[in-house]
Amino acid sequence: MQPMIHGTAISIGGYAVLIMGGSGSGKSDLALRLIDRGAILISDDVVFLETLENAPILTVASNIAGKIEVRGVGISNVDFIASAPLRLVVELVDSTDRLPEDVARTIIGDYFVPLSKLNPFEQSSAIKVEYALRAVLDSGVRPEFVSASIVKESLLS
Image: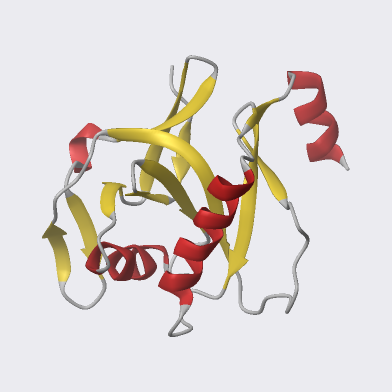
């Protein structure tokens, strides 16, 4: 059984970016702006996590493949890709640190994954996602497998 994640996933240059935040926080809106800049939708609102060759892969929920919610317009059809390797998580927040940690991470499934916190409604947020992904790729930082006991410890602290 694949773990289900509440979020929106897009692919930039073949790498998955998982956008996470509460309902109405701007996940689909930011994804739309990234799609307008050349990203490809993986899945909107519900994403599945698989492991392939010891790496996390985000996959589309088949019943919503190629669909994205456009607030105020409705459900729209867009091009999509069925899966891509996860390289970055973007957590949507109201305000961000001016100079964040060098390598912030979060736990997704059994992996520590590079994390960037962004305000989705800033004009530059789509470009910031691209810069954050480029920084992760250029540094060679990859998601790291963690044992279940470490995941439980992190969740309790």
